[in-house]
Every structure is written in structure tokens, then in C-alpha cells.
Length: 147
Image 1 (spheres, rainbow, N blue to C red):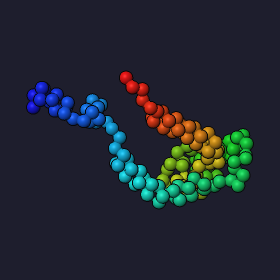
Image 2 (cartoon, rainbow, N blue to C red):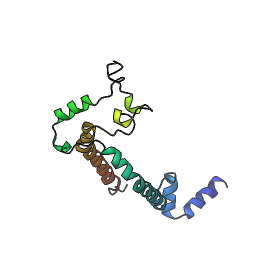
Image 3 (cartoon, rainbow, N blue to C red):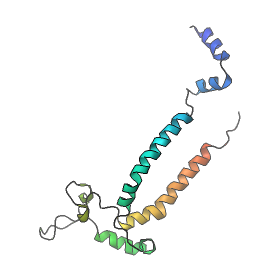
Image 4 (cartoon, rainbow, N blue to C red):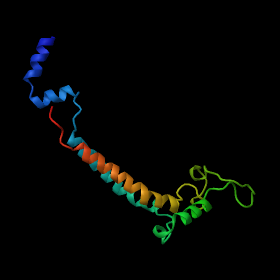
């Protein structure tokens, strides 16, 4: 197919298809998006109870009303420490929560976030992310100005 034939072919296409060709076919596919969202929903339904259990592990009864200062003190007391009182090792072991073999009771895998981390996510992180998501959705679906 030569250049003239290609142009003639393009002109024979519906206007929407020509527009898609100009932007390289980068259009939204709602069917694929729906299937992906359905799969994500199914996986999240199965995973949410486990994630919620981990997230709420160690939650204090009045955690939402404790001052930031008290939450910070509590967080400092829960930091990972080298060794045990018997070994005599001192200092802050920031890798403790990520090392295999350290039990959840000692602050290892599965111990859940501290109250300070949880309250930071709930009071600052979630509203910020929700605002960003809402901002992006609103801006994505604004009517486009015609040229």
C-alpha cells in the first residue's frame, strides 16, 4: 500500500477511528477495565479480612483520642531493639520487623503497625490520598475544550 492509498483508506474510516489513529490508539477499553476491576474486587474480598486483622493487631481501645505526644512515646518504646535483655545488646534495630525468624510478639513479621503509624495513616494519609484520587477523577472527566 503506497502513501496515497493509505491516505484514501484513512479518509474512508469513521471520524472516531481516525481520531484514535492520531493518538496512537490510546483509548480506554471499558470492557477490559471492568474485567480487571472485577478480578481486583474478588481478590480484595478474599484478602481484606487478613489485611484488616494485621492492620488492627495491637490497636489500643482509645487510640483515636490519644495525643500525638503520647503516641510518639508509645512508638519509641515499641522500637525494635537488638537482642534480648539476657544478651545485653543495646540500640535500635530498625531491621527487626523485616527479618525472618523474629516473632510477631517481638516486633517481627506480622506484628502490625504501631498506634502512631496507624493514626498517621488514618488522620493524615487517608484524607490526603482520598483528596488526590478525587482531584484526579474530577480533572480526568472534565469536558475537554474544543479546538
